[in-house]
Length: 545
Image 1 (cartoon, helix red, strand yellow):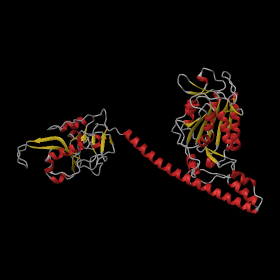
Image 2 (image 1 turned 90 degrees about the vertical axis):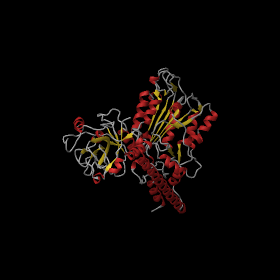
Image 3 (image 1 turned 135 degrees about the vertical axis):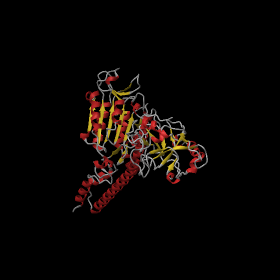
Image 4 (image 1 turned 60 degrees about the vertical axis):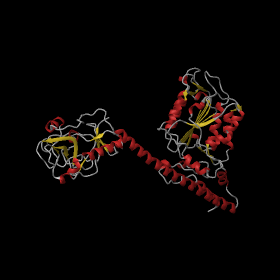
């Protein structure tokens, strides 16, 4: 096979997209190809809406705007990978309000995830003296009627929409007051750094919504050099004289446009970004289809040694492209993977926070929260429809529990906030009688601001009875499984029974009511069999504040 055939195969190889190590939606890696048309799978397609208006119905005519627009469209198509069918040029009578906004909406909403869009406007600009908003003036725009102008707010809204999927979008405006549509300065990459291409690959794969204007919130001049405005002249000159295979538009602006326009003209060009979450500080990258390497391959060698050198050079370039693309895509994939994980965690936390009312403002059922001695249990069960395996089998108090994820449970029916577990020790008769230990435990909860609350207390028997479930839901216990296993719970209410001397030798034996979640009953006196209380707990409760 001859060297010319090798070169033809090499030329075609560079037209094919390299396989990506990540899903297609993230396929935005950098590549320096041997032809003027880089792979769309790597860079995406390039689109442009270019507007230039000299002729106005009511405004003073301009001299250079339409010529600037035509010249820009020509160089983008000829040299910077913009296909002719993807470039829409609107000049003079074509550039109506309806046509400008309609074309912009259509182009923006039809972009793919990896596509790029450049919007250029040259013409009159104006500020609304009431709202301060900036406008582009279409060809039929009236002198003092902002409703007939193209609002920069509309332009920003379209390009900032989440429905506009394009990767990199840049607005270049050569008009008065066009600086009103941006948020701040650029994140400039250093051209002299040897890692520029690698950094550029990473930046090019992030979304960007950039703005370049010929001036800030001020008038700018129409005239300039060689029939172009001063800004357009140096922009076109920069695009013609660019000697890099790939360059981000911010560096092109700073190194070849800003200095000259600022020094020569009475205006200060500005570069920044739209105020939108769709901007991830990415970069709009220009691909030079007339790069030196592309020319070298297309010329074809005349000697065998030169043929071999070109083939080797082409293979090296191809390897560099694949390495750049792989490293950039790998790093981007890992960063996005980590970012997605953090976003999911944050979303889960927000959802949980939104669904958990730590304090119910108006409970559906209000239970007694003050302790007392002697409780009419029959009346209590009937009033609140509490379940009791002996005396209230038809009862079924409807709770509405929510886990607050801080060792507390909210019952949206009663408004009460419960400990999920309770006092982490087993009780016996002697320990229950020493109530100071219980009060000490409650005080500690309040001192520690447990669950963000300082009004913890022992529950009344009414409040504890609301937790008794008709069925065994928690490992053989009649309590909701949202709670830790609890066999017995002590209440703040005392039960008094005149039975003479019992155990301790007192005439009146006073003890506390207990909720028995093993048998689903309320215990009206303290069980003398200590073994039956091995699973007893102190479960504190907090009332709505």
